[in-house]
Image (cartoon, rainbow, N blue to C red; front, top):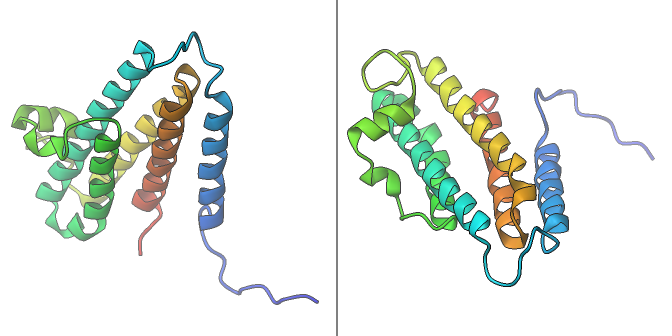
Length: 177
């Protein structure tokens, strides 16, 4: 028995593809845990450094979201859920809850990246979204690259947050709706 296909052809990756990618990253991280470099009980210093850097990176990314939301209030409804998830990532890596709210204005401006000189946020909403997507992509790629450097639970957390970052990129670039 054959079912008719949908007349609508979606653009970009499908939700199942994103979920399968996240599951694959999670399984890959699970396979690399435990046989790592010299883990003799406890958390190795390398894993602690990676988690601390990941917490700082997530806090800086949340500050970028804050800067874009402040500069482009019309994007707040679209960006606030993503920003809130980035804050949860900061906490998961051991960072201070809502650390971006404690960031200094100069730190927030640096985190926002290059722009029009008014806090570093691009003037157009489209460019601001593209800048956030680029930041999410760079961070997700870096975290995926660090998976093999950390054991078990840290690797699984990195894989999960990296997959979430990839989903954020999709939502920022293709998710108009």
